[in-house]
Length: 84
Image 1 (cartoon, rainbow, N blue to C red):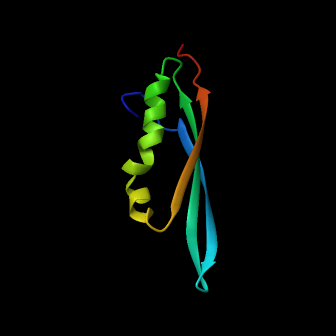
Image 2 (image 1 turned 45 degrees about the vertical axis):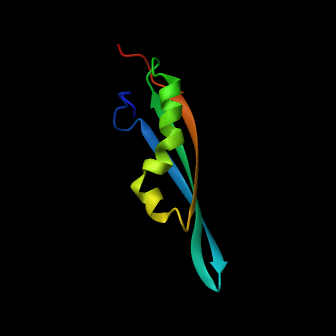
């Protein structure tokens, strides 16, 4: 993530989809993703924020569905414990 070392397992997410009936067909119309990121204490927050702000435009899945599904996101940050 923009040069910030984030070990496997320190980024997790949950996703919730919204289905709506459109012309008598049930369609997925919205996806909301909530990220939880465990970041090192010295992680530059401006870089983290920029990564999150641009992730939808760089995500292959979001780009594949962008014309038919609204993608939104939120994030919580947890400070990683200092290395011993």
